Structures are given as structure tokens and as C-alpha cells.
Image 1 (cartoon, rainbow, N blue to C red):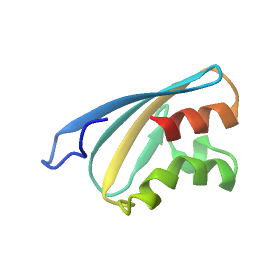
Image 2: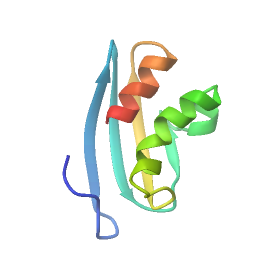
Image 3: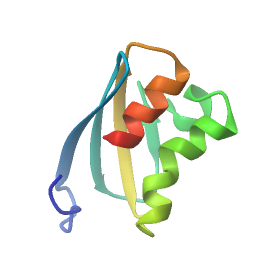
Length: 88
């Protein structure tokens, strides 16, 4: 994947896949807002474990609350979807 967005308004895109799930992740500089299929992450992902799986890349890279992520995901179940998002 390309380097993280440095300029405001610049957007980066990546695709992640796991099992039968596919996620498109759009990342831009922001305040840490994550939306999945138009819903806030807390509303879309039912368990704390699945939300942690999605946010782990931000914690590892020490960029939590620095980027907004707009995500669309299809196929599979909850576990496959959150792992596809993490991959993206």
C-alpha cells in the first residue's frame, strides 16, 4: 500500500480479502472516525473482539485517531468481514 495520506483531502484506497469477504478501505486524514457500509463501526460490528480486529492496524502503527476510514465490505460472516477490513 502507498504511504499514509499527508495532505488534507488526499485519500488512499486498498482492498482486503478473507475467505469469501471483500473490503474496500478508503483512508484519509481525520479524527479517527470509522464507518462500515454507512454505519459507525460500533453499530456495524457487534462484538468488542471484532471492533478490536478492525482497529488493530491503527494501534500497531500508533495512528489511532489520526485517520478516518470509510469502508465497504461484502460477503462472508462477521469474522471474515472484520479480517478483510484489517487486511485492507
